[in-house]
Length: 148
Image 1: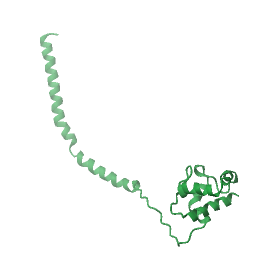
Image 2 (image 1 turned 180 degrees about the horizontal axis):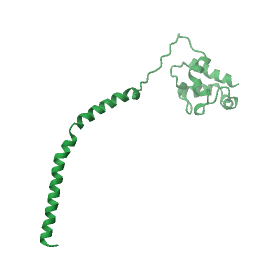
Image 3 (image 1 turned 90 degrees about the horizontal axis):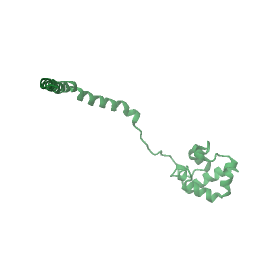
Image 4 (image 1 turned 135 degrees about the vertical axis):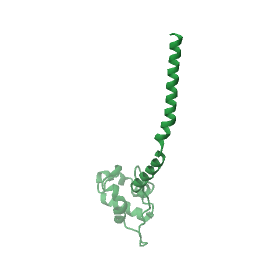
């Protein structure tokens, strides 16, 4: 390359860089004008639109009690039936003699211990922490009676 061509190439490159820098300095702020306000309000609007769908509030169910212990059938129908009626998560179905036979063979004390502490997918006390020992025993006896 000759010296004249080299000088011409440098001049073109310098002009190109200068034009690009001027465009960035001028165009960038113009393209950003107003977007900060729009983004903030759009974000707020989106929060308002999704809030009713996204809010979940968990509260403990309050069971009104007359102070008397509930019988086994009542406890079964309110607590145990959710899993034992359909066999969810491996729970033996109510009245399924074949499924209950090995469990009954361990004795009612062992069944009551499993119900009290939980077993496999079943939580302690069947997930009803408010059950008294007598109520839990009544529910176990009810289920065993259905399987005999």
